[in-house]
Image (cartoon, rainbow over all chains, first blue to last red; front, side, top):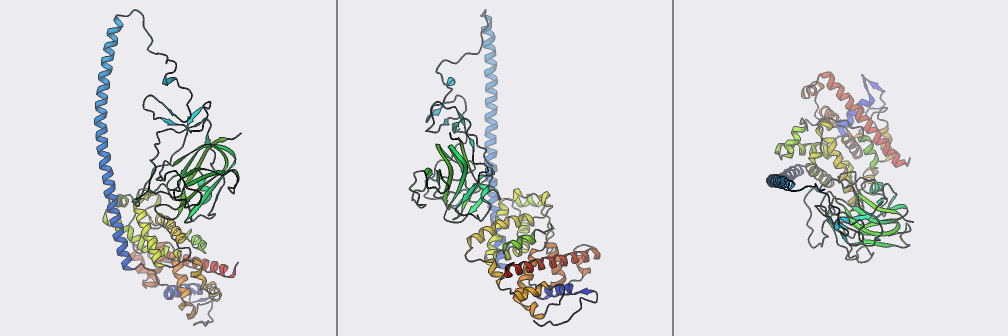
Length: 344
Length: 224
């Protein structure tokens, strides 16, 4: 290494060696990296096309919303006038009848024994019937008649589907979950997996950290999900004691319309899944995960999450498998929630 | 090896973009972009090409095809998520938001290409003697031999990609385009004093980043 100007004092003519070196580095060695013109054209075209598509889509949605709003407004007016007319008629009838009566009667009537409104306990495996607009509720099939039930309370993230969904031909998908249909669980059943330790077949996720699987954040935004490597992968939650598990909620990645393959959920009494392993969900119809052929249907990952009926199974460890998805080979987990009550 | 790139980049200061990009990515721009205005979209792609591209290149192992993929995906994602961009919070500087999105794309690409892209391999060519020479930046004039080496070019380019756009722009005006301080002041509507001060700060930032990278490489190769 021969210096072209050596030795040199630390400062020459008011300019330090450091400054001269920087100047020479920038003058001689710096070659700005610029993208090729071809790429520039390709990027501009892609961006303009993408933007036009988005605009078209949002215009369509807007016009649909306007039509629906108009319909709703018209319907609202009709209902309003009808109610007003009915009320007026009832007032007139009541006034006429009150003239011919000596004793006033209470308007309240006790429900008759055995009527629907009198039902206090739910019958397991059946649907509760509700009067009015409330939707019917489904009970876990293995529950006992003597237990008090309450609808499962799940805080849902914001819905956020982005991008053009990939073609999903040939998939036999389960019907999307109706969030208005309450899933009944024993009273006191709560999310017992919140902030519990998580293990994975891929201990160093490409994106995120394993603890995010149970951190309670299930939004479809960057920083909320983890990405595991391609192929079959699993995440495992240690509930730190045995619970009777009634429901498992699973959100893989609900920012885009995707179907995750070979989704299998198992529970066990030991962390290595050797003792008392039970499968509570399996949609791996081709046994590609090697955990047995599953009879459950594949499903579209949505903000509503996948609700798995665990039927009160007793376990400490929960493991969720998946093997890529319809968009890529990676495996994503936004949140897993396990609902249960401490097992006696 | 990935960590040092991240470390230096934390020193980024929000700016209004370099290379003569005068667009302020404010609420008005966002409205236009959401409405599909061609000029607004073009402004976004210009930032991506001029600022985001060098930012991504050294993070994907100097592989141009991967860098192009990352930049394009980032732009399309940015268009999809434009409603999330908050111009007031970003002070009209969209680059930081874009680099956030780009980091995720880089993660994705590196994960997919983990068998073929090795950031370590990219720097493995820099031998210990060269690193020792770089470390003497403040004490000894670089020889012609050092300046002509490919590793030096790689290191200088990587350093420049770490700098905030306005610093990079100032250094390029001065050392690549040969502009005087007066000309730079006129171009950027600054006083001569302010232009000189900006240039001085840019040189300081370059020096700090260059030495940080060289030192980290040295630590890697000597196993410290």
